[in-house]
Image (cartoon, rainbow, N blue to C red; front, side):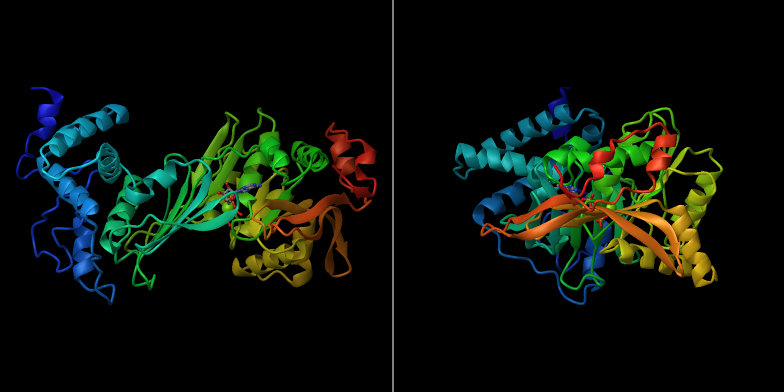
Length: 487
Ligand SMILES: Nc1ncnc2c1ncn2[C@@H]1O[C@H](COP(=O)(O)OP(=O)(O)OP(=O)(O)O)[C@@H](O)[C@H]1O
Ligand SMILES: [Mg+2]
């Protein structure tokens, strides 16, 4: 029997294997939820049941569908009825799977009495493919490498970020159940789940993209899906080209990384902290053992010798949690040359600083803060959160002796990312942590187009870490620090 015939064989009754990426059984046993109409995309059983159990506190709306959409929905249902999902599961190669589904869909379409243009037909084939193996209506967005974020606020609102600018797109899901089905497909592929008992989830896709989903009752207006794509290669050279920093700053940063200075990258949400950390990590020599610790592994280091650790949320019984703190402590026993913590948020800040102070120089991390000063204050708060009762002064001494450099990155009003400040931590002055700025981005105004006008400049300060760079054999020409505009 040919593969296509096998695919078209009606699924054996009683089989309940659902291949990854394929919709679940459209007619689950048990009570049929009131919201499931024949028009709907089949919803995985758990979610169909959840939808009916009223956890939303509102009914899932079933929007009227256009005739073309109706053909797609009917076709999708027919396909699921007719495809042998087990045979589908056996096809390991995605291209092959796609072409099989394509030929089956074309055949079913030929039997359709409704007149369809070639474009409609192609559109339907494509959408059915996306439905079966992909992310439904956001699949084309996901494939567009120029899009950095895909933000779905309930079934009808989809926003994207492209080149730093947010805009709304016309695509939409049919209803909340449809969106939930896609969310379920994404997170179950990576071994996570989202349902009434755990209504928020963080996951990482095989391509490194980061996904967060939060559903009702926590999200009030329907399921919310936020995807941060990592398809865009932002090496340090690309960051220089797009104006995030200039060559001189890159030279200094490269020197700091090579000379094992401890570096904190500070910035707001989505300002580019992780991207910068990733790019900066390329300056770590290839012969060093790097251990990365993240909540959802986003970093993609180029070196061979990288050990990636990921935290684990508690299970449904509230057990088994592994915190970044646990992982930092464990990493210290793994003979690391460098420890990179994706982001410090809590008690792990203290362990990280202690590691930086005790022979694990050259460590790097990021922090959510609006200025270098703010990042120092936030570190103090995090140390307090760790349950330590260090007096203020001891805490600041710990911070100032651990940290060498703070790099502040910002997303400006025109969507561009810039390193707005590079600051050296010089020690303590009385009771406070002393810092001095070396580079800054001087804003001069905003062009009528909205573009922020400004330039990078040096402050004229020659950083005291130059000695450390020199000892490490990294020599940087002194004139780099001459005061004024810098290219
Ligand atoms: N320097 C840059 N230039 C252009 N785009 C950038 C730059 N840095 C980051 N981006 C894009 O902005 C998005 C956010 O980047 P990133 O995840 O690095 O930010 P973040 O500050 O770590 O965010 P979060 O606060 O969510 O952790 C990504 O999609 C990335 O591709
Ligand atoms: Mg980040």
